Image 1 (cartoon, helix red, strand yellow):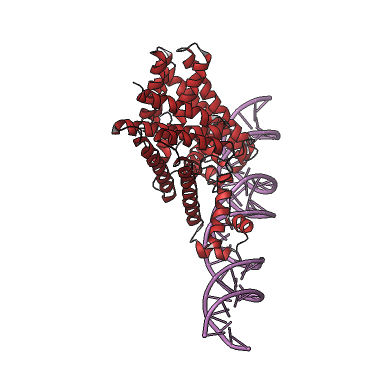
Image 2: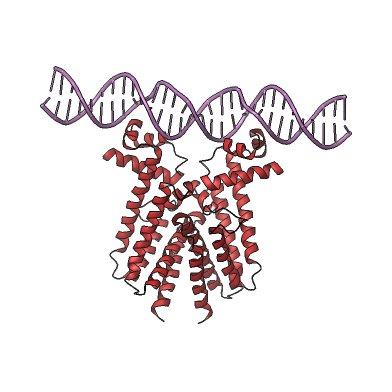
Length: 192
Length: 192
DNA sequence: GACAAGGGAGACCGATCTGTCTCCTCTGGC
DNA sequence: GCCAGAGGAGACAGATCGGTCTCCCTTGTC
């Protein structure tokens, strides 16, 4: 449905910039040019719309990251490409994912803090998928399962940490610094 | 003022758990047993109260972290003690800072995304103070300024990343894993 | 005892919230 | 041409929002 996508896209933009609870339904329908009736035809409630925006961003972000890494010649280059992508995101050089207001999943998790809440679990699921993607690339570099898991979690933690530093402190070089740390961690295991 | 502190404490608890925009003034006065008139005697607006909770949490969190690290015999132990403290926080073993709903400053930054907003700047200021604390301990380990800065930012990024992993994914071992990475980074520079 | 100040309880204001409903128009299939 | 359904515009309901105001009771000071 074209209108459904329009609603989700506009709602995501507003939720991402201002926060979920700060944005009302009326604002969403006003900016998307869709009638309130139509919104409630497609979504049972505001929360259902929130869930749809999380799903929308999950697909958008994941496919973007995958596109930015899958062309890499080897696992190590893919990990580095991940941080290069983050750097473009933070510095708003990437139109596909512009603008940058921190990580939507972190932001939404803050407003739906209860870990049993479906929306919070969607966010957790996205982060698990990201970890899985990193893990796949890491498996191309190392064979030892423990090494793969440890380094994957380290890279994921650096990714989250860099995103926070970029958003909260405004450190736009956070991705470059995180990349250097990841490089050091990988090199330490490759050259014994 | 006793009533002022009561208000700030209750407001912080509610904002932290449910988010700032999800909590109304009426809820805060109901739970703190303070009249609305009194609230507006102490704070010009809800936003002023939000700012007070950020300041309250900044002092509480910073003094807690400082207390948990300043007794360490050397800089390296202090950095490790930082991650031990995080581990207790995530697993709610620390009554001084119980409960855990992620980092308040990250959460609030998500709801006040504009980096020019005073509340967002308060959050940035807290993160800078944390980085400064880490930097002080790191200076006790290394003399080269570039090494100190690089490793301080790495530790700060690991701290933020671990907090996110613990909150969003529910990975309660995130601090332990981050500590291991920090240990590896420090050791690599100490034993050449 | 008189009296000012602080604060509690809550009415009240206009605005906005989520969500429902009515009325009307447009459009596509028959 | 006819008619069902989608969707636009927006009134409406009941609740809650941030914030102001009045009324009244307590308490401390003289």
